[in-house]
Every structure is written in C-alpha cells, then in structure tokens.
Amino acid sequence: MKTILKISAVFSIMALTASPSFADDWLSNVKRTIASKQTYPRTAQMRGEEGTVKVKVYVSTSGKVEKAELIGSSGSNTLDKEAIALVSRVGSLPAPPAGTNSVVLPLTWKLL
Image 1 (cartoon, rainbow, N blue to C red):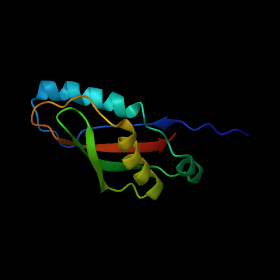
Image 2 (image 1 turned 45 degrees about the vertical axis):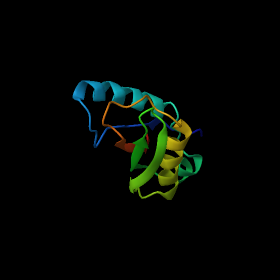
Image 3 (image 1 turned 90 degrees about the vertical axis):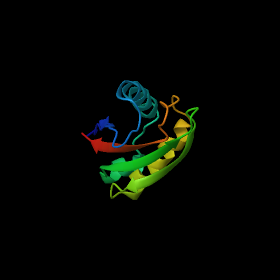
Image 4 (image 1 turned 180 degrees about the vertical axis):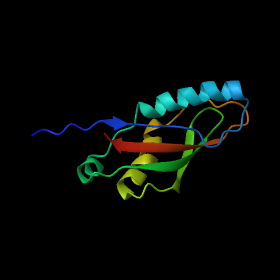
C-alpha cells in the first residue's frame, strides 16, 4: 500500500515595521521566495512530525539574509533545524521597505 503525503506551508508575519502598502508587497515577495525553498524533511515525515517553528529573520537593506534565530520551537528538533536551514538556503530576499530589518515568520509543516 502506497502512502501519499501532502505538505502545506503556512506563513504569516508576526512583526513588521514599515508602511502597510510597501510591507504587504514585500511580505508577499518574501512568502513566495521562502515557499520556493521549503521542503519537508524526510525523517520528520517518516516519524509523523508536524509543527510550527517561529524564526526571526534579519535582513540587510539590500535584502541579504544576515541571520536567522529560532524564537519558538515546533517540538521537533528536525523541523526546528530545517527552519533555520531554509532561511540559509534562501540567501537573499527582496530588499525590505525602509525601516524594516527583521521579520518573525511562523513556518508550519503539516502532513495531510
């Protein structure tokens, strides 16, 4: 019997300091960029691990991801590590609106 796993990624912003219209456009671009790199770790799939990781991403004025830090664990070490690795794989994001230098992203992994 073959099992099919579906993965959904849910993103939202917890903190963002910029004007709303620029922030909305920037946020949409950030979501697309990160979603294009998100994967579900095979070991987490096999163990049935799901969860939401909160990651604070620091972004330079040019859009380069300077660092990421875990601010909320999913309860899965594998998913927590994947969240930080995901941000590293992205490398750079669209240049943020003036005044924005960090954003908190909840990244969700869920087996359907």
